[in-house]
Image (cartoon, rainbow, N blue to C red; front, side):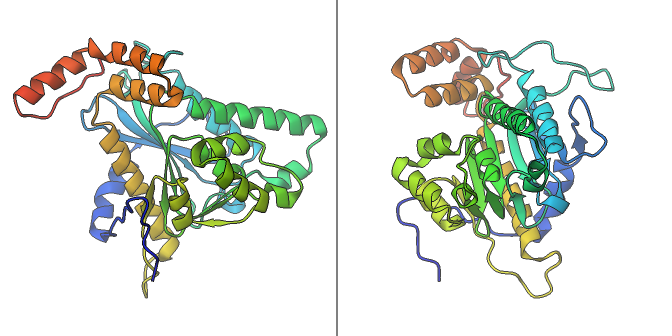
Amino acid sequence: MRPPLLLRPRIAIPFVPSTLPKLLPRLYSTSAPPSSKSKHEFISSFTFPTAHSNGVIRVISLCRPAARNAISVQLLQELRAHIDDIASEYDSEGNERRPLPLDSNGQEIKRTRALIIASEVDGVFCAGADLKERKGFTAEQTQTFLQNLRGTFTALSSLPIPTISAISSVALGGGLELALCTHMRVLASTAVIGLPETKLGIIPGAGGTYRLPALIGVGRARDMILTGRRVSASEAYFLGVADRLVDVGVEEEGEEGGLMKRAREEVLREAVRLAGEITEGGPIATRSALRAVGWAREEVENEMYGRVVGTEDRNEALAAFAEKRKPVFKGR
């Protein structure tokens, strides 16, 4: 019997198989490839509409099963291309760029309102850097790879829209550092995280030593980093690494695909639900709130409040409240 988590409310999402066919076909119906597709594609991207149909929730899914989604040069290039595509929709202040590019049908593409980083591989989110590939690097190639890795992670963490990692299994080293770049993390009860770099004679080099302490405090982060131990999903939730914990139970007899397949589907569904809940709010307000919380300073909160108070969305919310209906936000 699992001990109850007393300090933080626990989120348990029941698995209802009949709901998956409704969710996943819609989720994987609209392809959104990066601006430059490579010959060997290790990442796919899919979208579906937000509540107000004024944008999309985008899912970037790692798919390199032969290497447990390890971060290679190729995978990193593809990830950066997707992130840069999303970043191009907004300016440096987080405001929407207009107009957006046109799709193949001549229609303006839907703006990305939230991003989910997920895995298409059962049993792993991301195993970290591709050590086999790095073994053959020269010192110069290693430095170039690290610069690109850090730059990509910084670009992800700098996106002005809500970002969520959906983790159903193993996220170690650079895999956890990738997840730490997103605003929120949804973990299945089968997930395992850790920063084992000290066991390899190095230290976390892509943000782990500063993003993890900023998230859970220096003492707890120091414990994880110095021991290099693997942390269960329930402990990760207790520590504050995970924002949602999805209890997937145990493997059922004759279950198609097994427990890890179900865990991956359930954690993705909860991440999608969370992104949908967030994007029900006003787009300008959501981005402004992210910026205010990120800086955690009074002057920034005042500036962001000034940005939202005169918007059409704010007037729409007041009208909707008076008329006892849900507001329809347009991001203006």
